[in-house]
Length: 220
Image (cartoon, rainbow, N blue to C red; front, side, top):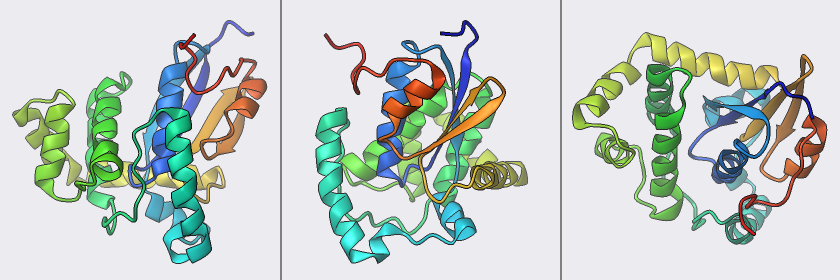
């Protein structure tokens, strides 16, 4: 295994339950594997539009399969997913908020991790939703932000800077030929290795010279 830390980028949207699975597994492995994990909030709707893909809920057989699959994946990965058809019509403002958090703290990634997790819980665990500003505030507070910090981030999320940043990250995912999320990009020896979904970790580990020991690497 090389001594240099390999940059691993996770492109995700909180409307994507498979993104939550990938997110939690990578968070568990970031201190097990020799990687530098970068969170890349993107817009799933933008990826669908840019790639010409169709949302799974519009394909009945695919949607029925995904509901059953997510129940099994939730148990296997140890992530409290309670799959259903979410009422969210789009997460543009939500992902702008997440982008604002990411931009505010730059490289640390601590708060964006916590905020993203709370938003996933609201959509996929408790089914409370996230699109109302009060629910964004609540998630931010649970993630450890102060009320004034949340308000500042909500204002920042409406800025052109953040709108442009979310667009550019979404386009970056499309430039890697993404057709959905999550998208994981590993940079190894100057080359980008691209993996779609939350079920490619064994292959990914092989490609980056690491060992996959299941979704719970610290359990004995």
